[in-house]
Amino acid sequence: MAVWLTGLATARAQATPPLQTLAQMQAQMQAQGAPNATSLDVLHWWTSASERRAADQLGVLLGAAGVQWNDAAIPGGGGMAAVKVLKSRVLMGDPPDVAQLIGSTLTEWADIGLVLPLNALAARQRWQQALFPTVMELVSYKGDVVAAPLGVHRINTVLYNRHLFARLGLRAPRSWAEFAAAARAFSAAGIKPLAWSDEAWQIATVFESLLLSEAGPALYQEMIVQRKAAAWMDPRVERALQRLRWLRNLNGDMPQERAWTASARELMQGTAAMLIMGDWAKGELMAWGASAQTDFGCVAVPGTEKMHLYSVDTLAMLVNTRHPVALQEKMAETVSGMTAQLAYNRIKGSVPVRRDLSASAINSLDGCARDSWETFAAPGSARLPSLAHRMAADEVTKDAVAQALWRYLADPRMDALEAQKRLAAVIHLP
Ligand code: BGC
Image (cartoon, rainbow, N blue to C red; front, side, top):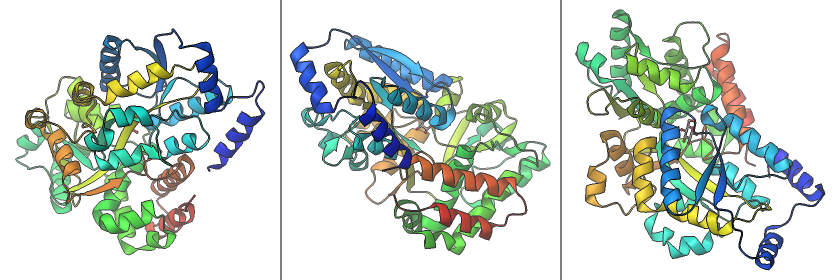
């Protein structure tokens, strides 16, 4: 268990009045009868235009099912601030009813009994058959189903401005050589080749795609999933780090830590030609009125075709003194159902977590989404968990990796080998 969670478990045990166990809460709830509230407090970090709209879409569908979405949004890309607020609310004895908990953070909370199991609902809704096995695995922990899945994001995505590429007579880059040639052409034309931010989580988001591109799925697994420190000393990691610095240097010397939406805006306005970012940036461009067919396009990061570096968004139902179990189950049922899956993911930029889409539903996806969904579904594809988005490591390890990468870029005197040593040092199994 992560160190801060051990502290939390102790605080939970010592809290006065003591926080109840799940069994105690359920017993108390039965004794008191069903709660009559109809709203659920939802803590999440979806605050950009597309994220907001996607959450509102869920709100509308839930409203029709008799569940009111009470918004507790905490701004901050990648959820850095939201995770902290959630921790403090739990420590104060006031967890929200629902939280955007994803990947390893989800299992950490489940470990201390704060997450409501959804086993009966999952069985009733035949999640095992309907959801992708990778998704089912992510929401399952120690025999329990611990979250409702919302959508699958693809991290290894290059978004590009179609108008700029057409103007220079270039095709979207399918290899690093084409990427470099396009970068040169855009620089010569006075256009920024790649929109960039030095926020640590965004650097980590770009880096893991580069790592997958250089290392391939097998070594990526060794480094990120099995967390073998020695694997981080492989020369392919050195090359990925050098490429990271090369990409960063396309943006000059000045550090610029800014929201991911600012980079998406540059792509939209045509002041930058490309952006390497999870496909939530696609959702954002669409929310601003751009079309994936005519204004921008997506390709897999060079060297990662047929690979899906994923981040799956999930909502966990938290155990608290309000006991809104029936409403929480209704929410889980609604958001994972086909109607919400198609409507929500279309806006969010992700793809449905369900594998039972009809042919017409698949055809109705935009080009980027279809490629993402089909790649995720294909038996021969490599599906790899994102480290930067909590799919593969706890919060502390993820942050330590992101910090090491940030330092490497911030300090031009640090060479790739030194960065590798630092990364190898912070990667360890829990
Ligand atoms: C989440 C996305 C979100 C993105 C930017 C990711 O970790 O999975 O849903 O849009 O962060 O905030």
